Image (cartoon, rainbow, N blue to C red):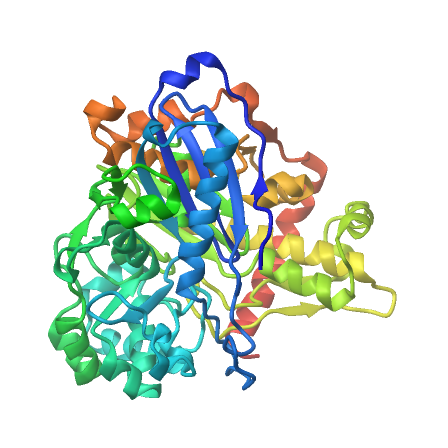
Amino acid sequence: MLHTPERTSVDTDAASMTHPISLGLDFGTESVRAVLVDSTGKQHGTATVPYAHGQITSSLPGGSEPLPPHYALQAPQDWVDSAAEATRAAIAQAGITADRVIGVGVDFTSCTMLPTTRAGTPLCDLETFRGTALAWPKLWKHHGAMKQTAHMNEVATARNESFLKRYGGTIGLEWFFPKMLETIEDAPEVAAAAEIWIEAGDWFVWQLVGGPADSLARSTCQAGYKAMWSAAEGYPSQEYFSAVSPQLAAAVENCLPGEMRSPGERAGSLSDAMAERFGLAPGIAVSTAIIDAHAAVPGVGAGDPGTLVMVMGTSSCHMLNSHTLADITGVAGVVDGGILPGLYGYETGQAAVGDAFAWLRNLLGLESFDSLSESAMQLPPGAEGVTCLDWMNGCRTPLMDGELRGAFTGLGLHHSGEHLYLAMLEASAFGLRWIVELLREGGVEINRLIATGGLPHHNRAFIEVYADVIGCEIEIHPSTQATAVGAAVLGMIAAGSQASGFSEIAAAATAMAAAPQSQFDVVSPRADRAEKYNGLYRRYRDLATAVADGL
C-alpha cells in the first residue's frame, strides 16, 4: 500500500549547507522516524513512516488463527521498508545531496528480538515457519514468557547469581533470554532451526553493513540492559543457563555470534545495496545500535549526572546517569557506561502509559481525549474518590512483575469518564514518584527532570499533574524527536572526528541537541494541589500493596 510519509517542516539556511549531516533512525512501536541533523544541531529533514503490519497481536499476516494472549510480534521486512522510505523522504525534504550525510545512527525498541539463519534471514521469512508465531520477532511488549521468566528468576535466586544485583534482584519478563527460552520450550522446531538469536536493533544494523555473523556488532547497551551482560562478567555463566535449561545453555554458547560494541562505535560501513535502497552514499559509517529510550539522553543534550530523562510514549522509560553505583531493588538495570561513557546508567520504567490511555479511550468509545481532558482537569485532586493502579501491562519498576494487573477502586454511580481519566493520569504520576523516591533512597542523586517523547508535547496537563505529584519542576524539552536526534548524534560520532569534528559523545550531544533554557517549557508544581497529592499518594501505595499481595 502506498502512502505519504509524515513530514515535519524544518528550517534551513545557506550557512548550514556546509556542515556534515548525520541520519538518525528511530524505530518505535508503530513506525520509524528518520531525521537529518547537522553538526550544529540544525535539522534539515525528517519523515515518519508506519510499519505495514504494525503490531502483530491478533493473527499472523496472511493467517486467521488467533494468537495466544500476551503476544506482540512484528514483521522484520517492515523495518527495512519503512526506514528506506522515511530516509528518502527526509533527504528529499532537506534538498541535499547524499554525500552530505556522513553517518547513520540507529535506536530501536528493546528487547525486540528474533531468530535468524547464519546469513541473517529471519526464520519467519522462510516458508517453513511463516505460520509459526514464535518464529516472528517478539516485540518489546510481548509477554508470552511469564512461565519462563519465573523459572529463570527462581534458579538465579537459588544460586545467588551475581548479575541479579545489577537488575534490582529480578530478571524482567520483556528481556532477551526469557523470550529465547519461551521459543525453546513452546516451539522447539523453531529453536532447532535458529542459528542466531539477535536484538532487532543489532539485526537492522547488520543488514545495513552486511558481513559475516561472527563480526556483526552487538550493542553493549541492548545486551547490558536486556541480556544481563556486563563488560566485567559477560553474559551469565554456562552453569546458570544449564541449571535453567540445557537447550538454553547450548543456544547461548553457539547462537550468539558477534562482537560487543558500544553505541557510537562504528559497526561497519553502509553496503552498496543498502546505500542504493536508502538513497545514501555507500561506505558511510553506521553506528552500533542503542535502545530507543537511552538515545533520548544524548538527544536532549543531557550529559550531566543527576538528570532524569523521562521518555514518555507507549510506555515510559526513565534514564539517569550517575557517578554512584548502588544496588536498588526494583531498578530495571544499571550498566557501567550503558548510556554515556564514564557514568553508571540507570533505567527504570512504567510498562503502560500511552498504551493504557489508548485502552481507556477505546473503552469509553472516544476518538480523542480533548473534551474529556478539559473536564477532568476541572476536578479536584483525587478524582473525587477514584483511585487507579496503572499496571495495565504489568509493573516494570519497582516490582518487575509483568503478571500484575491494574485496578480502579472507589467507583460510584456518580462517576464518569473524566474521573477515570484523571485517576489514571494521577496513577501514572504516582508511579513515577515511587520511582524517584526509590532512586533517591538508594543514594542516587536526582536534581533535574526532563520530559520528552510524544506525550509531553501533546498533553501538557499530563506534565502538570506529574509536577504536582512529585512536587518539583519538570522541564519539557523543545524537541519532539529526541530519540531520533540522539541516534543522529551516535551516527556523527561513528563517522570519526576527522569527518565530524567530534571525538566524544557528550560534545556532539551538546552541539547537536542541547537547547537554551529559554526554549524549555518549565512546569512548576501548584502548591495547593501538590499538598493534597501527598496524602493521595499514600492511598495509591496502599492499593499497590494490596494488589501485589493478591488481596
